[in-house]
Length: 471
Image (tube, rainbow, N blue to C red):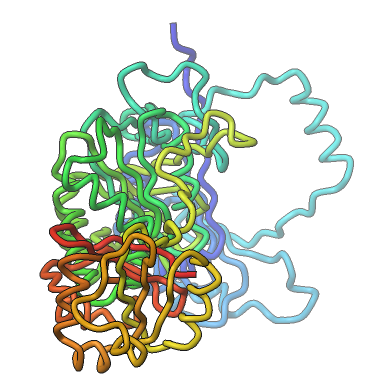
């Protein structure tokens, strides 16, 4: 048998300031005043200005009126029906003087508000010493820090705990296999923690690295289906990752992501804002969780309802499918964390494996010195020295050769370039991406490579370009 609910006393100080901050609460208080007494709810409102603030419908259901000294006669008449409260003298002698009008009174009566003495507080404490706190009519607020449940469901990944006050319940929110979710929030809102928490729950999850080169390789394999049996795909700060690519790479990267989010494995991405091409990707995901945003404009632009914006939303608190949901935090000390898809290191260092290789670079002298030290068993020559070798280039295994030149030098020696392309290996520095298509004949976009970091692409006859480290 459920215990009887206790009476609820709602006390609001500075009622006018509350309505100014939350105008929609005016209708709520009007409804509480109209029906609250029958439900054991009592309303006490305090304000410096009553006229023009308290609606007539609300005032009609507040029969007990009390007015201390007010500055305007209109406020006095609104509360007690006369100008008496406005005519009270000022000064310390008038402190605590008030006019009280009860429902049965024809006019207000003067009264002095009593002070509470220490003995009064002591007697009240002793009187209620054995009192048991009544059952709360609502559930406790969502916690500010939430650990993963000790016994999570076997067929789902836990996201967090939802608050459903209208149903008086706080159920766990989960991701089923194949679900997709976009987590959007400002700095420090809890995006990275959400990715770590989801990764810790699945040994088959793939976490996309933050490094642009590694991310490019992972996304390519996932989109092409060459990554093997993949589980949930997780990516933190996808918008930041996309912005690190040139436009042609960003376009291809996002098109591959569109294939990933529509795959049966499911994907969770986090980002700071929804704009541009990334917005189309977010729209393709069935669920959207809004963490704390930097402004109400960003909140609405991300698909949030205006009333759901909370500037003081704690980290990890999200608005998801019309409910407040607090996301779980990842396990401590990395316990259970999945590192699949994490850091894979630098690209492989290039080593000439054949008898003939050509290198296209603007830094000819520095590259020649570097490759001479790295390939002591090769002849490392500039293109200016190649004429002495004759044409076609020798294929003698005993004298493997590496030729180095800038793009203009290679264009001037087209026959030699064709010899390298058909019988050897051409290496193009990442700073000369345009020459990769022209000199190496590569038609498709090569793997993304950072410029000014000794990156290059190597192309052999009939093969796709590969990213390598020259030094």
